[in-house]
Image (cartoon, rainbow, N blue to C red; front, side, top):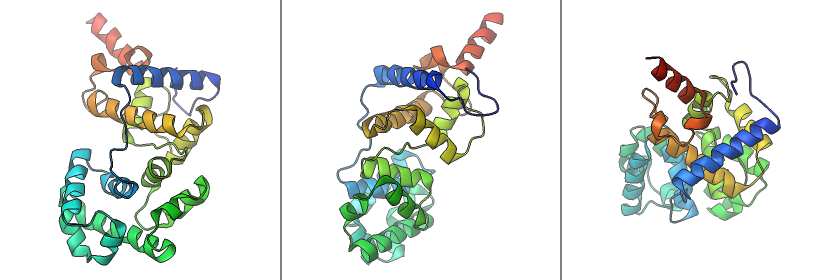
Length: 238
């Protein structure tokens, strides 16, 4: 398979995706993602993790917990400087603090702070509302919909795009929503599968499919990846 101008479609894509999923799950096992004690912690983590390594997000979450700010009611009551001080490990701490405050204000004003009420809505309604909150983009919204509400909205991130492009399944440039819908069209609407598949792709991108020097020999997808195949042929010629 090699996509250059657009996304593949049809049964062939479904077969490839299911094969990739099986290979990754066999290699890594159940990753039990998202790691959080509560749904509220999960949502806070989703807001903090964008464009930041997870280890830095964990430090910020720990700081918030130690400061008694691991809830949107506490974040709402705190001044923004106090919140920003705790999320310094995310680097974009002023922006991240502002986003946490915006979400907290929305939750308090519309749902009296009851996150469960917000997350109990139908998928499309919830996603549209999340995207209306300042600072909540598509990836964060889908994290919350999938991991917080348990609804089947596939999460697309930079790792996903890089891996599928190198495998030859998608073009290098593809719109977020187009790729999200592509996954949802070709896979069963199973939240648990979407959860695990996203986690598996992230693990692969973090450990093997690196931006500059991919470690193809360590990758569970090497046998169905166009990039890995090209690398093997180049090595054989040398």
